[in-house]
Image 1 (cartoon, rainbow, N blue to C red):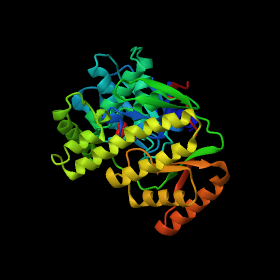
Image 2: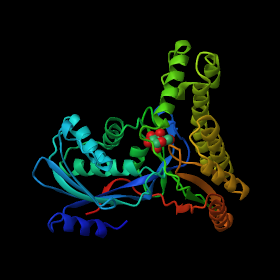
Image 3: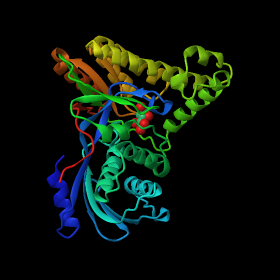
Length: 383
Ligand code: GLA
């Protein structure tokens, strides 16, 4: 993504003056899916694709925003009743509102922004947008907000302005990303650790099914509700269970008759997934990528059969990976479309990509996209 491109658009739309330029990335997640809002662990890393925004304070109480990719321009005020109609602008408005709600003072600004995180691919384009503006406004207005709170501002934007009851993983990864490192985050204590990730002899690659996922008003929120109902049932016997992260299969089985079969399956997946992240951490300490891969396949099976957030195309891509001898493969992100993440041995990499693309095209008549993963830095100022 070119900063110069954004800058030239900004100059064109806002009378020739430049401002400051900020960027925030999308993310991958090695393992730990739908565990964040269950108080569990996640294992994301920021990528080299993201959002770039040029921003200049305009001394008014209005935001004038131009989306370069959508060629759409919107103006809005900073009060609750000033919410814009364009869905892309709600992310920026939401970030402003969440900052104001926390007691900080900000003013109007002009901005033009663009991104190269594919939309709806499960790589968190929306978190990249939120983090860009949260980070930028904090910097430009000298607010002194810490990085965790910047991530929470993005998350609250999703909750209160975009209708997605997401966890903290995406915004955390976007703000805290570090080149060459994955991050293990405990989503309850918010303790995190950087894990340098340079698997010798393996590569990470995303294959985008180009089936767009939509999380807004989606089954995503329903999954979360299922988990909460399972926790409520378990809590009656085990008051210390605050999240599914604290539960065991034995505890879940005790309440099997009290909850729906669907809620049971959702909880079963989460309990397994919390454990898989820990398995993967252990395996990484020993450079045991076979075990990492095995857990990835198990995650895919769980997301497909128990959590039911996969789709035919993603299951197909997962099957091809297996047939090609790929070490690990699974659906990545919230689900309902988007990408698989694949851990592939160098020697079969080219053959796998070629086979996957050809078979996918043959079966669905569309061309999957391939993104080689480059783990990169989080939110930052570029100019
Ligand atoms: C989306 C949400 C995250 C997380 C993932 C699934 O990306 O924004 O908080 O729940 O789905 O792991």
